[in-house]
Image 1 (cartoon, rainbow, N blue to C red):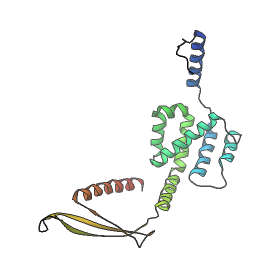
Image 2: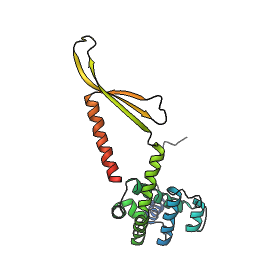
Image 3: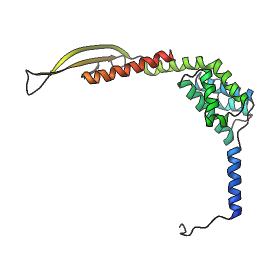
Length: 212
């Protein structure tokens, strides 16, 4: 059971806690720029190129000299993975990546020297186009470009209680897909819904243009 009494920490305990906190806040992982570049290339092979000849164990051995990483090393690798994913999915240019490394507090703490920043820029300059193309290819494979046909018509919806009264026009849309050609998707949209959908398509088109 927990005691109801509250004990004030001793001065010695305060001192040890402060020392540990200071050490934790000032300690950063140190890696040579050439090994960071090797790490980033290895992560690219594993994450995007899907190279069977490169495994995480092999990469760890090449970069750190051991297959099983310490907690500090593993945290650093995970931070590199996170930044590669962020830069790739946002389709950053090398300049945008550098700006992030120099402005984001967390990134500045992890990649805290000019050599490490320049290594990231060098890596991204060489590999960002290939990574982006790989993401585009994977997107096409995942979704399969499955829409094969679209048909539509405009119907007039009438008030059930007053058949002679025309209430509104609606678009009836039929979508056919490669996966299930015998069961097309049929739905209708009123004017407001159609307007909302068209606005979303404009956003999609703009994003595709930016990434192409």
